[in-house]
Image (cartoon, rainbow, N blue to C red; front, top):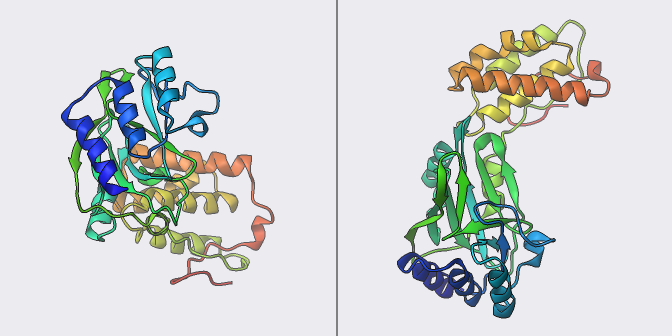
Amino acid sequence: MVGPLQEAFGEVRAHPSSVRDAALMYTAAGLEVFPCVPGAKQPLTKRGYRDATTDPRRIRRWWAWQPTANIGIATGYGLDVLDIDVHAGGDGYAVLERLHRAGLVNRALGAVRTPSGGTHLYFPSDPDRPQRTWARGTAHVDFRGTGGYILAPPSTVVSHLGRQGYEILTLNPDSHPVDGERLRELLTPPHPRLTPARAGTVTQDAERLTRWLGQAAEGNRNASLFWAACRLAEHGIDAQGLHGVLERPALEVGLGAREIEATIRSAWRTTQLTPAADTGARSLIPVRGGVRR
């Protein structure tokens, strides 16, 4: 499967042609495709990626109907994708460097630059081990497996920056499937477990929780701040109090002031919408190495 995929992406990179021709190249390599709105990411078909197909006749009909439609590739069967996002609030490149150092993403089939300045890393999927889609928004990294899709070159997206396209940057002949679950576990911050609360311990527990936040690893810091703020809010600390307790340790681990403010505000609102049951029965004491009950 890797050979046909590499040939298809290589042909698209070397000879940028019509989106229809590129869609046909992808389907010839075994990838299931479907049309998306020209200049946008939304599907044009009723069921979206569930309508994806390798049938060249349907592909021709779709692109005869919408000649400039973008190409959506349904992921999880033939292709898995690690999506490194770039947003106003941050990007996932520090996390990507961390994954590279760990040797977890070094055998990608190819790298595609996205219109936002992010990167899609393509991996051949293991047909005997489909992997589900997941997201780690606070790390600005998503994984597209089963139940997901991506836009593929030469698709373009129109934004305030104008029309920009997806561009294949590199191809690797020595590619290998990626372990999406291992990536997900690495990017999920280990939460300090909670013990039954004791009267008068909220202040002490808050101090211990700020120390735990100060040890948050790169890539987990925003998620750790959100979790810590939720736990404090559940103990009756208001939004202003959350800032007072958590702003300093969050700054010390490298989070920006605006990101801290937005994350704490989001956490406080979340707890107001979904208050924890019996909050008085919980403590904030972080326990090294896992949960202490």
